[in-house]
Amino acid sequence: MDFTGEQIERYSRHILLQDIGVEGQEKILNGKVLVIGAGGLGAPILLYLAAAGVGTLGVIDGDVVDLSNLQRQVIHFTPDVGKPKVESAKEKINQINPDVKVVTYHEFFTAENAFDIIQDYDFIVDGTDNFPVKFLINDACVLAGKPFSHGGILRFDGQTLTHLPGTACYRCAFHSPPPPNAVPTCSQAGVLGAIAGMLGTIQAAEVLKYLTGAGDLLTNRLLTFNAKTMNFRTVNLKPNKKCPVCGEHPTITELVESEQAVCELKSK
Image (cartoon, one colour):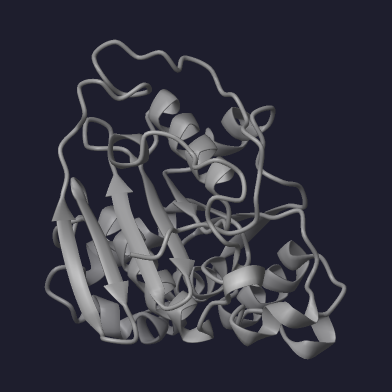
C-alpha cells in the first residue's frame, strides 16, 4: 500500500523500528481485531490499537457507561455516563485515528452470536470481567481456530496468556469456571484502576506482535503480576492432552454458556 505523508508521520516511530518498519505497519493497517468488552481492559487495549493504526477494530459490549466505571475505564469520560460503551469507545477511537474502521456490537458475547462475530477477525482479545464468558471466548476461538489474548484482573493482580492454534489454551490451565460466588467480584473486592492499564497495554502489545510477527508471544506461558509488590511471574504451560476442548479426545464440541458472575481472577 502507498502511505500518505500524514501516515508516514503518524506511524514514524513504528516505521523506525527494525522489527516493524514499513511492512509491519502495513500489516497493522490491514489487521482486523475484535475486542470483547469495552471496560477496564478493553479501554487501554482499544486506545493503543487505535493509535497503532489497526485497520479494523471490532468492539462488542452490551453495557452502558456507569459512574463507577470511570475509575479505570479510561476510554469513557464523565459526559458518557449512560451512553452505550461501544458508542463511547467508537467516538474516542475516531478522534484518535481516522484510519481505523470501527465495527460496534451493542450486545453481549454469547454462545449464539460467538462464531458469527469472530469469523471476520484475525485476532480476538478477551477484555471481559467474568469467568463464564472467558471460557466461552476460549472455546469459541479454539473451535474456530482463532488466536486470542486472555486477560483478567482483580484487586492488585493481573494475569494474561496468548493462545494460537496448537498451543495451550485457557482450559489447559484452568479446567472450568469456579462455582458461583466462589470468587469475589470486582464490586465486592475492588480493583486498583491502574491495574487495568498495566494488563491492557500488555495485551495490546501481544496483538501488535502477532500482526507484525515481531518478538515472542505469551504462548504456552501465563504471565501474572501483583502491583503491590511489582513482582511479575511467568508460569510455563503445556497443551493438556486431556483438555476438554483442545485435547486428544475433546468433550466440548459446541458452545455452552455457564452461569455468569461479575468479574474474575482468583487472587494468588
